[in-house]
Image 1 (spheres, helix red, strand yellow):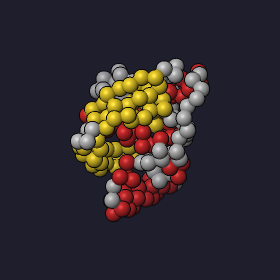
Image 2: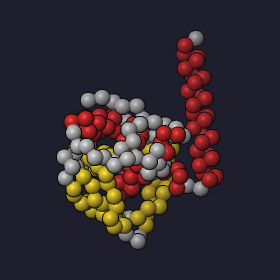
Image 3: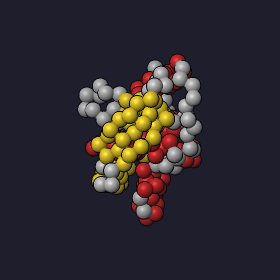
Image 4: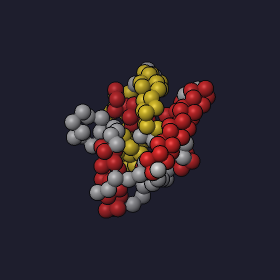
Length: 176
């Protein structure tokens, strides 16, 4: 297994729409294992293949405290969504240290495939529902900040630029 590099916002590759998975093979299983290891190490509760520069429709999720309930969802689609919405504070491994509230359906029912290509359905609520929708957005080239107002997005971009500048300055001072 390997830790994969996670693309950081505003990397243009995060806007890429993922393609459906058609081959269920050992390479796919290895990518899922690497993505899970990357997600756990980050640490996070979900990771889309898009975030590791693999533009296929696969996500890994584990919302448990114990990190013992890994879900691999291939070609996921929402087949039902509740009318009730709920705001959740979201963060993203592609935007470290950035959090904001996003309103999403409180419950969703999804259809997906497992690593062997078998189709299954899953009812999701709470953090799992939020995480599934957040990661599925990545497969469409959408990052959670795209759900925020332009003003909030601009503030986040400014914050990210400052973080990068501070990190570059610290690295330069360290090398001297």
